[in-house]
Image: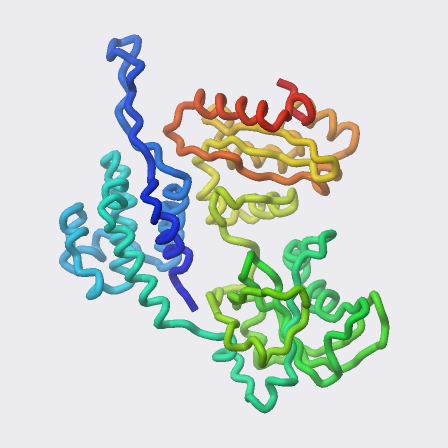
Length: 410
């Protein structure tokens, strides 16, 4: 299980040394009418994502004061002291406090975070966390402890979208839909025999899966295009249902595989403290939400998503999956930033847009709920001038031709 993979992934991301650029005000002359704006760093989206991630990780670790943690290790909260620290002798919490300290320094001194990145200090701290993670690799078999003599009677069913329904949305509504219907559904191929053990995995991302249940197959009904089996939960494993996230790179199309052929590749990434209730924020460049997913995030007030969206300006895209029409919109300080803007769409489906209002009036709100998808084209921190965001919004409208062929009226 890799505790810090959500942080150490930035080692590769930061390898291009593209962190951001200084923005210098060369237009204003310093007069009362045209005051000069103080220089600041316009960070890349990857750095913004890193900042959000370190805040989430530290919050989940329960570190109350990063300064106190650093002081207990003889480290002062200043650039020289932090850079000189021997990372190999520090605790995990101290390394996390170094990372958070670098991030927090930006609040008091523009460019401080850029300096920590360009000096390689942050990358050094991340490399140390990665080394520690690699020493802690845990396999699913370490949790289940299935004897070799029985492993051949265990099969894994990999569940992912069939192109019509999103199994994750179904699972969040009612786990039984996945654990009974999807696990035991049969078209032509028989996945199980009576007496076998069925492990149910649900796709989270490219190569991550959620363990939803483990059942003993007790009956087979001999039907096609229907639920063909009945099973009973194996209680000794119930503590892991909906909580264990597994990494496995699936290279074949078949949904069912024998456990003993892949058990050494099923790596436990995380054991959640509670049952899975939706994805954590994946990064601004990976946001692609259905209406149902967006509604769930806002209604449940998912912490990582709320933190990522509430103070961001952005140019975003709404796609009507039924006909391919697009709507390009912007979130600025004038309309409450990205979280407030998207919350409007959850409330009424149209967010005040003229063409989308017509669509809701003609087709109904359910049309929006069924067909609309929300994604981010570009995101900006709160200090970027609204004019920049609006200019980029106009550029995307022209590029995607959403005025001529989509839902943008102007």
